[in-house]
Amino acid sequence: MSSAYLQCIEEACRQRQDSKREGYSCAACGGLQDVKYEFDPFNPEELRRAWHQRRLSGEPIDRSGVWRFRELIPFVEPETRIISLSEGSTPLVGTRRAGWWAGPVHLTIKHQGNNPTGSFKDLGMTACVTRAASKGVRMVACASTGNTSSSMAAYAARAGLKALIFVPYRQISAAKLAQALDFGALVVEVGDTFDEAFKLLREIAPELGLYLVNSVNPFRIEGQKTIVAEMMEQRAWRPPDYIVVPGGNLGNASAIGKGLRELKEMGFIEKVPRVVVIQAAGANPFYRTLSSGSPD
Image 1 (cartoon, helix red, strand yellow):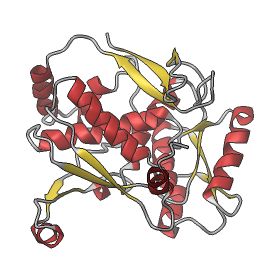
Image 2: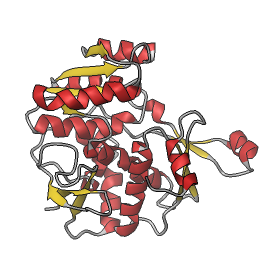
Image 3: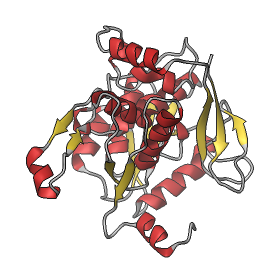
């Protein structure tokens, strides 16, 4: 059976830790962690066929575009209850006119608005809340200005967990706030910025026994990376030249990069496309970091 472990992403550290360990940061240096696997031997072609056949299944776990590819995220035990809202399985839409305007290029769009709460965050949340429920957690929490809050609230309700959301003062979408409240989440306005809200949440989480589901939680990344497997399957396992993704805190860009690298290492694709990250001019720390030539 495949097994999972955590590893610090900092090059100077790279400490390996038990996947059942509490916390979200490396015990040695405080850096972020990545979920790694020791996979059982497998045949890529047999797995491709199994993933395709599951699309015809009536089982709830197979209707999920995340858990249909569960061999790629074997961090849960076979008997674990999967918390799913049939997320994923979103269309890859051709956009001929937009492609001509942009190039001309052959352009397709992976429409994540078809997810249960309307964003790609659902892909990560099914994995993250499944992890939380399996650990006996009673309350999940996040800081958010929109999509993360509504997604967490929905999956917490599905799991029977309480949900706490910290939002910066008057900086959350009204539609997403309504979703979160409809799903029974407790929403608290804290500070003037997302960073202030998140900092306070991280400080109080250990004392209150909160399970954080922001992107510092590596299991969020595991769910989100499965979009790559679904995309490659929809393209008959022929990778595109580029994958273009908006970049906020870069959790999704990291997930896509991780998913592509793993598919290449496992023999599912022959090349790794270039990932292009687009950041808003007024909030572009990643762009500035790369432009400066300094990793810090």
